Each structure stands twice: as C-alpha cells, then as structure tokens.
Length: 292
Image (cartoon, rainbow, N blue to C red; front, top):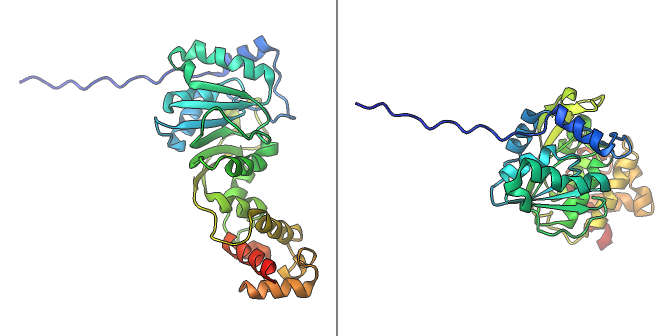
C-alpha cells in the first residue's frame, strides 16, 4: 500500500520589506511627506492580509491610488488580472514599472501607471471593478467619493484609512461617529469596518492606527432628486449637527417654516437631528423641497 503524498504548499511570492522600501527611497531621494500623506507599508504579511480581505477576483482590474514604492501593487498583481495605479508623485510613478519588472517580471505588462491627482482623474486605461488602496489620510473621504461617482464599474473594494475615518465611513445612523462621510458613502454602497492595522507596519510610523473599510456597491436610492440635491441636504443637516433639522435646514430651505414643510412632506420629524436619518430619508427631503 502506497502512502499518498500531498503536494507541497507553494511559498508566497516575495514582497517588499522594510530594507527594500528604505533602499528604494534612498535611491530615489524620497522622503515621505505629510503633505502627500505618504506612509509606506513595510510588512509583507500586512499586504497579504489587505489583498485577502479585498476578495479580489483573478479576472478583475484593480484600481490602486497612491501606490508609492509598490508594496501593495505587487500583492495586487499576484491576485488580479491587472492593476491601474494612480500616483501623483512623478518620481514614484516613473519608478513603479521598474520595481514591478524587477520583482514580478511575468506581470509587468499587467501594470498601468497613471500620473495624476486621484481627485481629478476622470479617465483610466482600463475599467476598474475593484478599488484597493492605502489612501493618504488627508484626502481619503473625498477620494473615495470621487472615484465611486466617476467610475461606476467599481463594484467593491477595500481601502486603508486613518482608523477614525474608517469608523466614520462605516458608521450607522444614530452612532456618535455617523456624519457626512457615512451618509454620502451610503449613496453608493454598503460600507463595513474590516479591521485595524497597527502603526508599526508603516514607514514612517503614523501616530494613529489605520482602519480597513470594505464596500460593496449598490444602486443609488430610487429618487427624482439629483445626487447634488441630496448631498446639499446632507451638508446642511450636519453643518450644525446639534440643531434640530428644522433649524439646521433653514438656510438650505429658505426659512425654518420652509424646512419644516419639506421635512413633514418627507415624513421626517422636524425636531429630529441629522445624525438619526439614513440616506433614504435625505433623498425624500430633497424630493419634497424640489416638489414644493
């Protein structure tokens, strides 16, 4: 009787480590800047964790924002069909293809680098279906909202942001962290907190932990109001967070009385506060004002 021999478990492909990241930075004369929110991931296991949590399909085109020196890019190329990397720093954008050619020569043709500000990009060389990124802390929310609005092919994703920002994006109505990012993100999809990343896996180490936020896109709420009209209500409601909606929406509606009329038409208590309403309630308020 012969014993069955199990196939050996393939070793994971190498990823950039701390010494590799620092060597690349020194070669390029790069010093991470707070202005661009640059904190490079230096731990391969963290990269693998992010890629796994993102549930990237091998046939997908992944959009990565701020690839930096390429830590996450290599992990994404191992999991996806191709990666479109949007980088604002020309030095980093020019070096990234060479890094991929060195570490993943068989996948070099699957990388497309776009030198651009992610807040202004409107066209990409391939239609992305997933967003996976270590986002600069100072622009994380507007970048996510801009990309979801601009690229409707994005079906799901996972972003790493400052932990408190992750809590805001994934917050539900009635919670202390629920606010403008929570409601606007809910227009596009369902957000969920997917984990916390410690400070020691970055160079330079940030002063606060990072959070992972996963999302699944859904259709926007069925409404006759435009996205801009709905978002205007959201902005007004949270500009004076502690006020009742009748008072907070007075400027938006034209007067407290007009705000109350729109709120009652939408089935919303005028004495309620914005933090208890979900995205559907905000769409009804926008509709009610447009119809008045």
